Structures are given as C-alpha cells and as structure tokens.
Length: 409
Image (cartoon, rainbow, N blue to C red; front, side):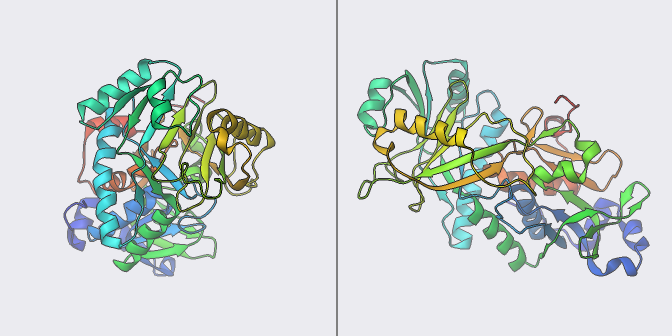
C-alpha cells in the first residue's frame, strides 16, 4: 500500500524544491501549482498519481484524452494478469503483490475488476521458456499444472489441441477490466483530493536544470516541484531526442468473436485465457461480460501513431484471427466478429519498464515501456514510482533494470 504520508514541509525538503517553487512568477500560475504533476492517466500515470495523493502530496493529473480513452495503451476492455515470466522473476514477484492490491481496491471501490480465469500456455513441446516459467511459479508457490494433449482434450473439449503437445496451466491468474480500471483509479484520485485535467501537456519553461511548468494547449501553465511523464506511446512525441531508439510503438489488432446462442463453453468461467506461440503467435480470453471470445494475433511490426492513425483492423489480421479460430476453436469458425479494436504497444528496447530521471532536467521523470505486460503491475509500479520520485526508494537493482537503455532500434 502507499508509503508514509508526507506533510507539505517534509515533501518540499525531500524534493529540494523550495527555491524552484518560490521562483515561479504569479503570471505562470494561471493554474494553481501542485507539488507533483503527472502527465498520463493510464495504468502507470493513474496509479502513480493516486499513490502520491494518498501519501499527502498535492497532485495534478493531466491526460490528453481522458482515462481509459480509446487511443491509450491502457484502454480497451480487458488485459491479462499472469504470474509466469520465464526468467524475469521480478515481474512474477510484482504480479503476486499486485493480485492483493487489485483485490483490496475492488473491495474499497465496490466494483469488480479482476476475473480469475486461469491461463493456458500452449506449445508443440516442452521447451526452455516453459521450464523457466514453471521454475519461477514453483519457487513462489504459484499453483500450476503441466498438461498433456490428452489431458487438454478431456478438460477442454471445446478446444482442438491439434499440434499442441503440452500446456502449462496457471489456475489462479486471469483478466483485468482495463478501461474500467483506469476510470476507477482516476475517480478515486479525485475523490481523495487530486486535481484532474483533460488537456495536452508539453514542456514549459526551464529554470536552470529544472522544469518550472508544463503548458497545456489552451494556454494554461501548471507549475510543480516534480513532473512525472507517464504518457505511454506519447513519450517519444514529448521527448523525441531522449526517447529516440528507446521505444517502439507497434499496432495490435484485437478481435471479439460471437459465441453460439445458448453455448457458454467459451465464456467465463468455463474457459481460461490462452497463449500460443508459432512463427508469430496468438493469445486471447474467454468472453467476459458477454463481449465475445477474444483473439489477438501478435507479431505486428507496423509503427502506429496514437493520435492520427485510424483504428481499422487489417484484412490480413482478420484472416489470421479467423484461420486460428477455425483450427483451435472449430465451434466458433462461423461466428461473426462482434467487436474489433486497434491499439498500440510501447515496447522498450529490452521489454523492461522505464523509470528514470530526464538526463537534463533533474525534477522530470520518465515512466513507460509497458511493453504489452505493464497494465497488471499498475498498483505496484505506481507505488514504486511515487516513492522513487520523492526520494524514498533507492534500490540499485531496480534502478539498473528500469533505467533508460542505449539506443538499439
């Protein structure tokens, strides 16, 4: 849960920001100043802002389109929460902590966000990735089973396991409501005294090695002691030189197929999440809230602009999704597509998160690199960022993992 509550004097002492705040001109404060401005109300920014507010900081949260919007990487209906991470145990530990955080927030807010569907990791044969994933799950006592093709046929007759030699099943993992979760976090932030603005923020006036404020498109300037830019695929637009070669923003087409009338075999809780690697790969979820059976072809390398590119699925990905459905879930092969989405990922060079200070502005922090697996970590990552930017968390191991990496793209 959030770190110790800070009074205003302690906060300013930690950040060393008194001089910067006093130097701000009255004119620049058309918008009342905050101790922290967070740009981006997605999974990372929203949870960071909420945690800082619960720690006692005065926080302004700014998002260009609003929490859970259709352009955001954290938008859309659902995201997966899984514990298996091959040899990246940090994320397994964080997911186990995040489970408790999500459940506690569900109770606090009185709304359901987490569905324990379970997860099937399908493969032609047992391989190194499955072995290291199972080892991590066993180490942290996460329930899991190794299933043969015969066991898959008996347990899930609605799935055709042709070509699948083995599966690793995680029964306690599942699905999170993504768009609804972003909205819930933003609502909680405001109820607890946080200030939210819809607007596009850009860098304002520098003051030596610090940033004095951010400028909104309507001419408003918002001053603060600390600035956290957690704006996902927009990080490269706000900081083109700093982020060059450090983030790649590919598109992803998502499909929801109808389920047969009266047939609940493909709906929660009767079927789990699934993930399968071939030359490109697929994953998907059972129907949640009657939205349809989710199929996501992966491997897309087309660069996507979150502001201007249209959200129209490609004929190629439609064919991929339907061909996969026909093979793996033949009872759905004639069902219509009932919904589609085109979203984008923000892939870091090593698929680790980015939490690092701007190289030239000491009070500006860059937070991103969700890399397709960040949403579920929001409650834990948000607390880490909040403690990091206020000087309360100095973990050299995490700092090394989350630092801005050299250009590789």
